Image 1 (tube, rainbow, N blue to C red):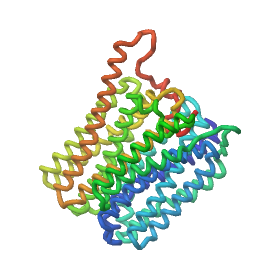
Image 2 (cartoon, one colour):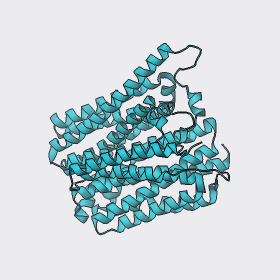
Image 3 (cartoon, rainbow, N blue to C red):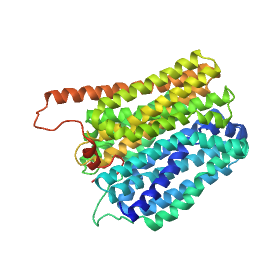
Image 4 (cartoon, rainbow, N blue to C red):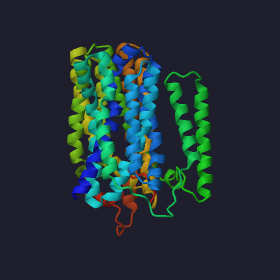
Length: 484
């Protein structure tokens, strides 16, 4: 990797760090924000879930626009939008304005991140590409774990009222550095003349409508079952639209070959369930420690440090574990995470305060280690099932599914936790997270069993073994969001 490539990598990792950090850093700041602005439960849920929602919905169109017009301008423009919306949120005197600004921030972050992965695909090859993607995965995991302690430290030093505002401004220095550096250092990367990429606007609109209809009742919007009906109609319309779009010879958002691939569908379900569960778990534990046990923000945030340490250590070993154990190794890691969350639920139901905190710290360490052995390996193995010629689109849908799951998981878990007081409310939130992790385990175990059956009946002359580290390093990257 030469000097120019290293500089591009550093700029991209800096942008990735600040946009992904914003997902988790508000966890311990919600009580302070609520007290300052008088925010209701529904608004708090929108502040947390809305960012992940618009982040996910922006991924595919932003990635495709990067292919069409180059990545440099979208990278810098997305960062500028992200930073400006953060300033609006920090200066807001109404809770609804914070929620609206967070939606805009999500669009900015969702515009930036596909350009990062696209640049890795454009500029790096083989092991250099694998290292860049591994660094990005570690940045994402650590930002999720470090965010709460960092937010708690700021509150501890600055106090509740200005503290949560400073937290929302924390991204601004990163934006002011990385956006100009991006304009200076990143290649324009315009595609060859005549290259055509479809945005599939009808598909994107229908997918967005279905997702929003699922989110609205979870954040207290009146309408009840009518939203479920609307979501079902939008989903049905999406299926019909995608078939017609494909029949017309254009690239649909959901390729029929993807939806027919059992391995891809189940692997995506694993990613969705696990990602949504872990983000929601960190949030509900933080709310309980502050609202019910009276922990100061910094002490509550420190509970995520065991998860950060475990994730970092396990991520460093994940490539070797994947090469040796393949899908069964992912299943075992998910089972360990389920055991850790079950331990949390049992402790919440039975143990007194001091013992409860100790057990929750152990549970956080367990889920952190498991997460490091699940996230990147599952992504790599899932994309092994993508049909030929769909590596970019399959990666886009996988990341989009994770973001939508995060929105739904956070909204549902906070609805259960905020819907009552004390331990019963927390137990409901933790049990929801456990249910999601068990669903991920069932899907992963089904995949492992299917692969064993396939290998047992395979022609030994056809290499159907699990991919080794060298093979994975030379495959198209997990996060590349455009068609080849």
